[in-house]
Image 1 (cartoon, rainbow, N blue to C red):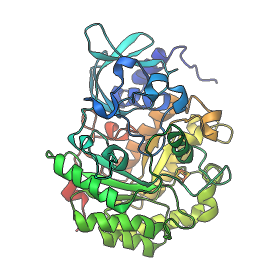
Image 2 (image 1 turned 90 degrees about the vertical axis):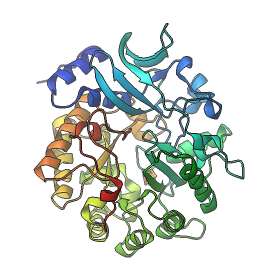
Image 3 (image 1 turned 120 degrees about the horizontal axis):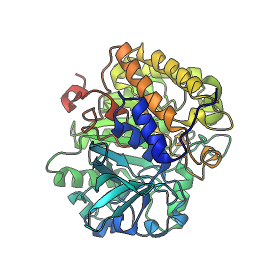
Image 4 (image 1 turned 135 degrees about the vertical axis):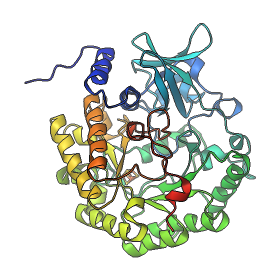
Length: 449
Ligand code: SF4
């Protein structure tokens, strides 16, 4: 039997809110915004670093559904980094959503006659919108004139300092780059637009930017940092991957011991390398596996298959769990790519069954994966072939499956993401934290003895 897909986006949204009453409406709307993007009226853009609104930093990927050259005014006056939604017909509790710009989206943010910002869908207002305030530390440049926004941006409403210290990936071209990833394209488009976009960030810049954050974040909103960037298959600055990322970890933890929860996103590295991250003071390790299914892994992440291989990748995740403790190894997968044409699953049921198998595999070993909602960026092979991303129903059933799996294995929300639950969650690129029961994982608890 063919599923009946409602004819308007409003009808689709409403039908899923109704069909999945135990998934909060906040999460349903957030998933649709993340997979579709938002059109921004000029009245909802920032004044870059000169105004009162925190601008979108382009912290790693573009996370836009059009190239920079097609964003119009939003390419000149950046959109906000995130938006906070409240109220409306669903009486939304505060919901933080990462901004993905799509001028063709049916979702639009604009200022109404009363001057207040609202989110509308097909002409109907869905939520009041608050924009993130400019943090004081963004107003203070480094001695070199570089900005904190480019060097050490914060996301998740200020919770996470995002340190993409290598803006390029050495998996290169169609036979190596992950099919959903625009890191290399994003670097090129920012360079072409003449924006500051440092390929390899000097350690001294990172420390200087962190010192500014530490100094001006007087309320200590920032609680974690992520060290990340592309994969290193040869060397950068003469260093292999673990040495390259490790030098930042060591320098940060020597200068600011325990100030933030330190996280590293890197390839699944051999155990001795991972041990060094731990010895430097890193608390959480993200060896992202992207997609569970064996066939899809080799097609969607051909570089990972070629340089490490799926079995070895998974084995190294288990090794890492011995180093960090299973709770502190949090591999990411990109929710939605397993349904991407031409290689993906044909039905939502098959896709969910596959990912659930992966969740059970990890969670039965105490490891809690997490996900990022796929943004079909137009310069990637999968984005080009699937401009609408994965079906919204897939995303909602995945949230359901994830919560069920956590319960089945007696696990709590992963550490390093703030407080779970609708109205509390700050994790902005997926609504998995909005969907879980409130459960605060404090910094103290997040740092193992
Ligand atoms: S490993 Fe894949 S997802 Fe990560 S930066 Fe490289 S191409 Fe992108």
